[in-house]
Image (cartoon, rainbow, N blue to C red; front, side):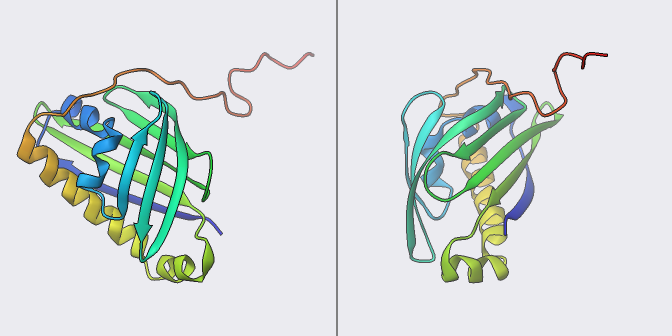
Length: 164
């Protein structure tokens, strides 16, 4: 059974600053609890090492969609099945709403129990609060990757009309 978590936070930085910092995956351990290390393998692929509730996991993920100042989406390519997206909504010149959505398959009894208790949702909320503190204390991003990554056409979209 898949679990979906959605959390949002407003940060006091321009949308470009919030977006640019979020594209710096290797900085995630500085504000995401449970993330021990992220290695950037290339512009679209990362290797993650996490430890949550004593359970260590390693997996690879790839960016599946990216639009500067709007959205970054990813999915795991190895290890536990998970995917996510973060969207950036300009509130005004100096404020941005950051919304994080996670979809994952809990594995094993410990992860299923933690999921039933809402552990991942609380962790996502706390991680966003730490991101807010991190980016607002810096007032600038450590870098940024502003490449475009399109999404694959969905069923029924962008397909030629059916023959009559």
